[in-house]
Amino acid sequence: MKYFFILLTVLFCGIGTKAQTAEDSVKAVVNTLFTGMKNADAALLKTCFADSMVLQTIVRGKEGGIKVINENPAEFIDFVSKQKPGLADERIRFETIKIDGPLALVWTPYEFYYNGQFSHCGVNSFHLVRFGNGWKIQFLIDTRRKQGCQ
Image 1 (cartoon, rainbow, N blue to C red):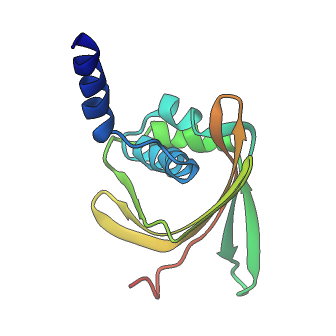
Image 2 (cartoon, rainbow, N blue to C red):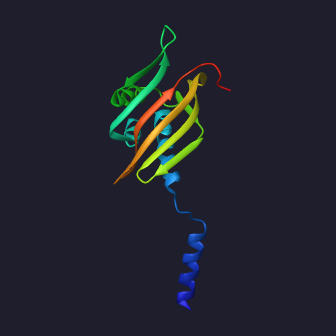
Image 3 (cartoon, helix red, strand yellow):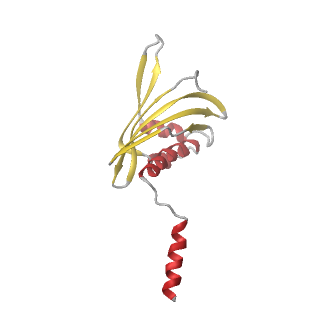
């Protein structure tokens, strides 16, 4: 009889749980990045990035041409951590996630708000690598614009 209750307990405990998929764990890292930004939490941001992470943004130059700007991830973390919590609010939606073994690609259109005011929109393109300690952002490039956001 006691085995019946043990079996019953195991079954009921397992009903509400769902194994986290690779896609869920990739999303969790990306969501953690934006939580860290919103909370100005440097320690949380650092947990998202691979040691050799590359951070870039695509902008239109003064002459109208396209430029790719390299940003220093440590400087980005430092800048964000000096903001007042709640000021930097990037709202994303997951549009595409592709995974092949230890490599993941994530495409997230976004709108960025600063101090509650709309600033700009664009798309983030993430490449994540699954290391022994989980998924980390290896490469992040984004676009930024003020028109065509809705």
